[in-house]
Image 1 (cartoon, rainbow over the protein chains, first blue to last red):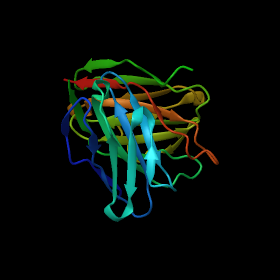
Image 2: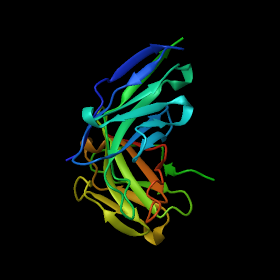
Image 3: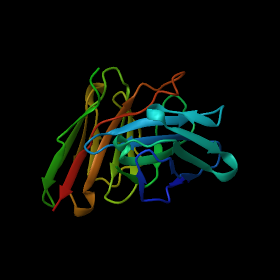
Length: 116
Length: 117
């Protein structure tokens, strides 16, 4: 069975500092990997996704993530955090999509707090 | 384009009562998903519709939960009778995925926060 681990429940960073959110997954083959963000009172928004190809993926809002097969990781990074990045971040893994399938397994989320 | 709409945004009911959650997907999205997040835990898949058909309902917790999508448009998720452990946030999401469109992302609604007392 597939699973996702986000080891950091809460992270606090200063505005302008760099950010790395960790994500490890367990899956029997090459997975599809996603990062979502949820701001207070909002739904989940897709930041970026990895299906195949280049292991460094660029997303929206200046985020990027790197797929490392050897470490079963898909860590999310941002070089300089803005106060508006404060939110909860979810890593997710999905299986092969055949004719329809966004059945995702999510991690427990990382709550990001940004200090001004 | 309107996003995925869910209502109510909040619902507080007593144990044993019935609650119906509604989701309106983005127009033209054949695929509709329900997910749930119980407090402090991960977001979990409940079920997946393709148009009006249930493609996968392996995540439904038990037979107190009934999901429908008549006509392939909006969907409802009914909990009857509700139990304390049903409390959580219920998310609906839709997408245009299908053959040749595997990279169609999920668009999530803002969720319905259900509290069973």
